[in-house]
Image 1 (cartoon, rainbow, N blue to C red):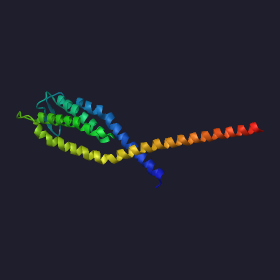
Image 2 (cartoon, rainbow, N blue to C red; image 1 turned 90 degrees about the vertical axis):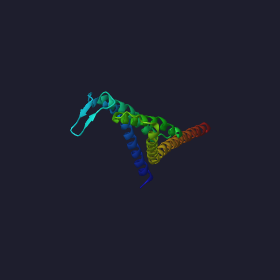
Image 3 (spheres, one colour; image 1 turned 60 degrees about the horizontal axis):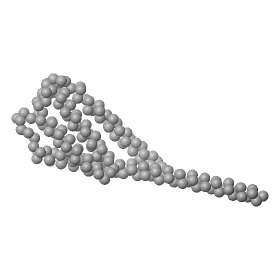
Image 4 (cartoon, rainbow, N blue to C red; image 1 turned 90 degrees about the horizontal axis):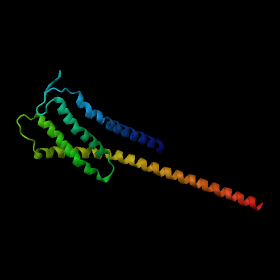
Length: 186
């Protein structure tokens, strides 16, 4: 396989990955507003299950709460996984906060006794989520580096092309100047 075909293959893989990420980000408002499809009743009956909202007034409010926590988690996770800067570790802090809030909302609705969810119970869950995110980040790192290298290679090739054009123009100027000097001598 030639270098050109490998490069083209990597460029298409990069374009495909970028397009998928763009589609996921663009779909996030639809994901958030999906709470509108749920009923405004306290009980939601389907052929598969019956859901009764415990803490929240109705099913739609519960899913609005879940989506208001899940969508930022979703977007921050994409940002964390694709960020090429050194400070990407700082994204974990708001991400873990939203994960904590999401799990608290889930547990709050299913909680019947009135016990509150304590932070010491949430620390192992958040730690596990952070390890999962770092694992995903590690696996995506090579793809991100390939994309960055492709961009750097493109920039360098453009510089080389511009230098070649400038050299060709300079030769042309010298050739014209040389022919004028010869004509002046004749």
